[in-house]
Length: 129
Image (cartoon, rainbow, N blue to C red; front, side, top):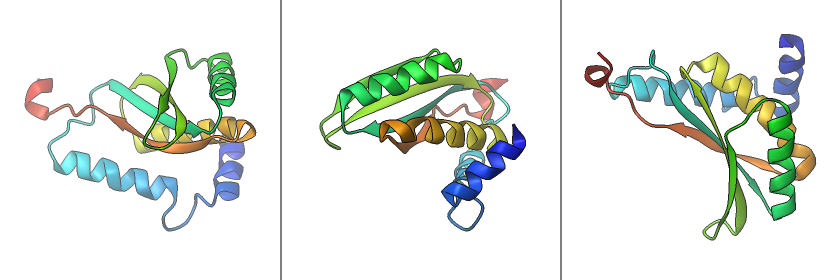
């Protein structure tokens, strides 16, 4: 599996400056600097955009077949596209976020989908005690 992910990273240009891994590391550094307790589980949402609703639905079906169960889609007027959201309860680590992001990007590609980032609610250290 790890060899396959390394191949995906190379195909997506994900192993150099501006790579998903580098961008994710910067986001996590900012979260920690802002006081987020990155050791606590929370829902992390991975988003993708599609030009057609049937493509978004097909992507969600494929994602559910891979075990991603918390999936939804809606029309996003601002982007004139269908937005899919996949939520995963997890501790936000660089390795896991990057692995999931690359896996979902590969899964979305045949449906002409493109990643639109990930996000999660902040868990402040004083709230997690």
